[in-house]
Image 1 (tube, rainbow, N blue to C red):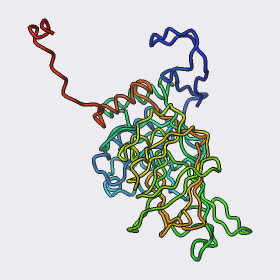
Image 2 (spheres, rainbow, N blue to C red; image 1 turned 90 degrees about the vertical axis):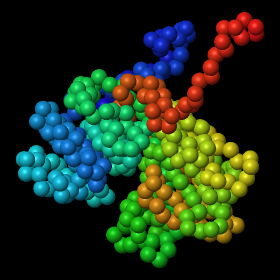
Image 3 (spheres, rainbow, N blue to C red; image 1 turned 180 degrees about the vertical axis):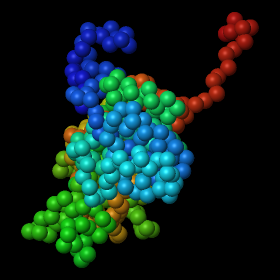
Length: 376
């Protein structure tokens, strides 16, 4: 995949009067260095309504486009698929994988998601480095990140394969969790007690290091404790504040319309290079959400005065406990997620705001009758 690049350009078709300006986000287009041959299809698990769309899509990709289709092994273990004899010949052509066991990151050219926003978050979690372009069909509940409708999927998939599509590069967070080695935390095979792969283990200093790529947000909260969470937030090595409340959300612009929006943060277009810091129910009248530059490094630790531990999750997954001496470092990843648009990044975003979140929906004010207008 290659994106059309450039910073300065001539006036855009939107009618700008400036002779030189930064690149219009709507001008980012998807082009292929070579035609995509392998596609990863991600289907929402345990949803019977998606079985027929899944079958139709896979048959179209294999038979009409001669593509290699990868699916997660547990998708094919669905009883409805197992018992479908007509789908048998197609099913045998699948390449399968298991999460946390098989690395397919270098074998996929395109990702297609069937379901809700969770399928896109799951796709992101499978790729800790470069991510292939993602085409997401709205077959779930909310659908803020899944702009495509499935009714005419053949023509839309064909356009994407031909490279006729706009993309938005959704920034991700690179997260590094450093923990003290305690009891069962370190297991000889390098897997921690909660199933997270230990990417680095420094026995000299007694630390366990784990890394994650996060599309929406990192959430640090008080967990089951009844006490306030008490965590220190550092920016580029300087202590900027202590969060005393239910917790804190560190999110990407993509995540600004998720948990952060529910906690009172502003909504930021995914093309804006930024990181959001949003407190969760802070015990303070003046703690407002803030936006910091994308290039900074945040570090979050339990305050020395904290009465209890904290808990952290990454896009709602891999939840684990954070204790005194542990740290969470967060910065913008150099591996964004290329999300394919129906129209363009700006139009799609405002369409999602209107359709999914009903942004600024209000009954319009009535105008004055003509007689009153003359009096005024």
